[in-house]
Length: 143
Image 1 (cartoon, rainbow, N blue to C red):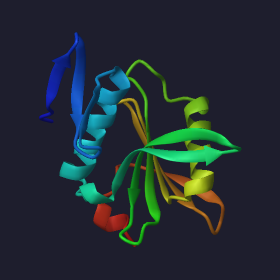
Image 2: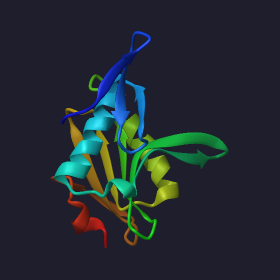
Image 3: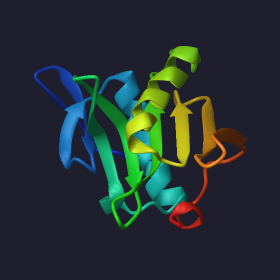
Image 4: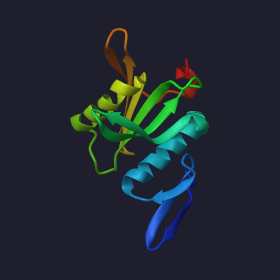
């Protein structure tokens, strides 16, 4: 994807279209910005319904969900956890996104390190989850 970058005081930065500002370009941010582009350009998620580093408070501790996609009524639809490419998607990452989803209650969870992507659909009624082969289009999950 075409992204805007710049160097300020010897620090490389990338422009975040959602937050509308430049942020430090670390490996995890590279994954996050490319995944945002993928959601918007390929999966047709509306930019205005995406939040980046969405604040959460769990047991009085502040956390941030990397990307949250919302329905037009404000309900969370998708939670995405991004890691740097060298970080394995393991049980710890699964537990992290699961903790976030206790509050958010999104039906789709996505874990990515930019190389490997996992997508899971949650059924809250039956308290089950199923792995999804591909990232869904926004229109297919907006309800």
